[in-house]
Image 1 (cartoon, rainbow, N blue to C red):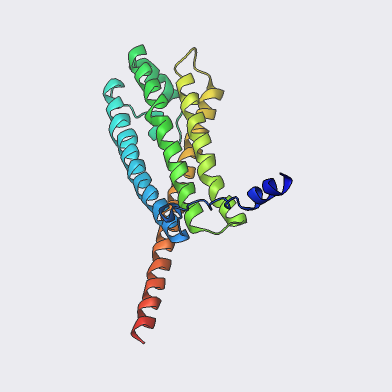
Image 2 (image 1 turned 180 degrees about the horizontal axis):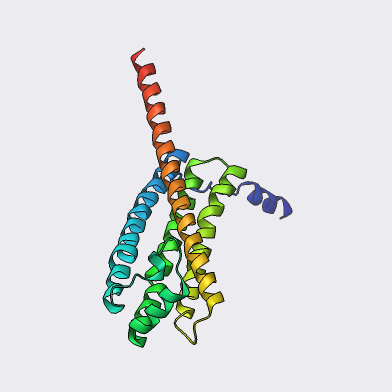
Length: 210
């Protein structure tokens, strides 16, 4: 009986190897291509959000403030006098609309821009200190932008505090500087990637002709 059991164990068929679906295996080139598609869509979304937030809705807010510019648009900052004039011109409903704008497009735009820029850096730069430096700028921009929105909204509640105005004004100027720096990184990385890809294809075409 023992021998028959052993022979049955030895005669058992070996377990079949798992079937590998070759369609699920991605090469680095395919992964890069998928990342580039996401990047193109992200850049389009950022451009749309910038137009909607900065060029459309913030400009429309001047209809509710007797033509006075919103603090968000003032790159060089603003004074206590400007905030007092805004508070006098804008009723609670107008201030509420600005607050709602800050909570919607005012959050989506910096987050989308930061994520898209970080994706572009991740796809087109090698790991190392340079990548972390290029990541730090868009991340800091997003943090400062959201902080600035809260600081501006606080200016419409309670009495005007010169220290709060100075803080919000500094945040606005810093936010615009970081915005320009983030856009410069995004454009620079994309242009460098395009030039590198063009050179690689050019070299490959020359070798094919030889």
